[in-house]
Length: 58
Image 1 (cartoon, one colour):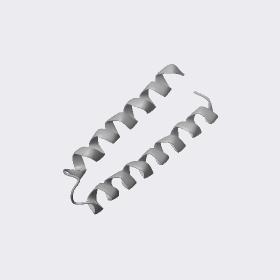
Image 2: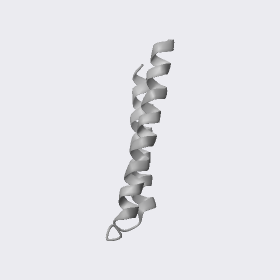
Image 3: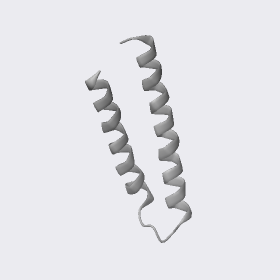
Image 4: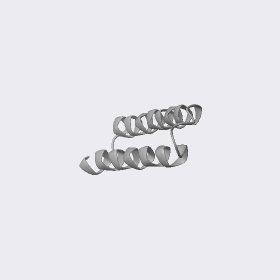
């Protein structure tokens, strides 16, 4: 894996962590949305699958 591809993968992971944190905070701030950890966990699983797919295609 080249250095550029590794850098892109790390930056993508950092952005996904930021998005997951934002989703968790948004769900936490709105009590009518139930189970914030399950929503964040679902997004986390989708994000990990997307990163794994991108790295597998490489």
